[in-house]
Length: 390
Image 1 (cartoon, rainbow, N blue to C red):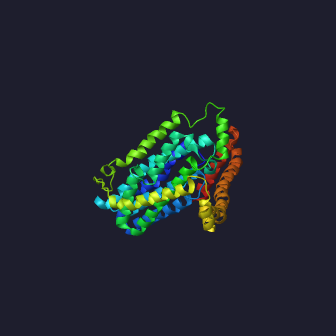
Image 2: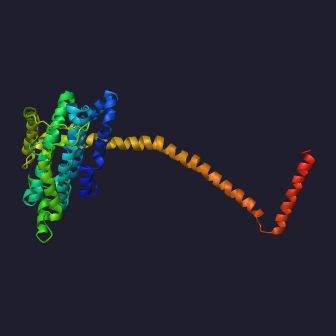
Image 3: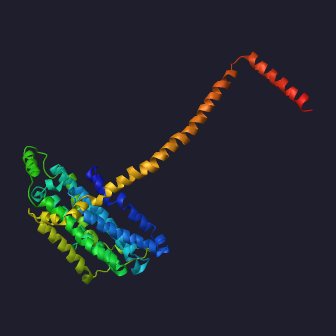
């Protein structure tokens, strides 16, 4: 997150962070052949991750951090889809849904990160509290970012709707508890993404925005960026809009056979209504400046503070690493390495040098001395064989 935004987009959309999902998918036959508890564990860990990260994303103000926790949540969706999947045929719909969501997520998450990069480039801040009213100044970024938000929120006919529906269907068929968590989390996803959208592009223009506009009036390079920045947004927006119509089961399935995707209208009503409810709630709280969100925050008290601080996981990691691992494992290991391992090697090396220094005096280069050594050796051998070994 500290690096350039295009790097964040690549990492969060298609490479490093989804490698775990891809690895579980590649090893899926091994999971299926092992104890059923293995896939159950994958399912429950995925569902927890999806909900846990979505809750945290509702409180963050750094726009890239919101998207980072969003990625963690969406990876949770992919993971529990694998966890509730069987092998082959209709039983394997969770596997196909997971890979389908990995594919569609790559499109709209890359779009979200590059859109966030365009916003940061324009406003010179990562904090959504410095933003507002940008739709008038960044029309292309605004429209493409809105398409990405609709896609991740699961609104039809955008790409995320189709892949998320298949994930929810797989969960509904195999584990009602995970389905319930997933359904609630999908509504939460719509809320925090449109919280981000309204805080950036609607709400009110903050002082930082006024200052930027005033400075930009004297700078002919101002604006939301040239075609180099806008073209990827437009291409990815097209993908986020149309990718859901790809018959993904024809290309990817758990057993390699074609899996026809079926659209269940009645099943989709609840997820879509929940997603729309999340969007409307964000609209109520954040479209225009008001104190509704502040009142809710005040009513939550300590719980909100705990979520804002990411449930103190960072502090927990630092405590475990610095206080426990470093002190009780790292320091003794470092002492053993430096004293015993390095000490042994250094002693052998120093001993070799000492012996070499002593015996190198014998290599004087004087033939007379070598003759004396030879004569002494010959006499010694003669005494040994003639008198001692009779």
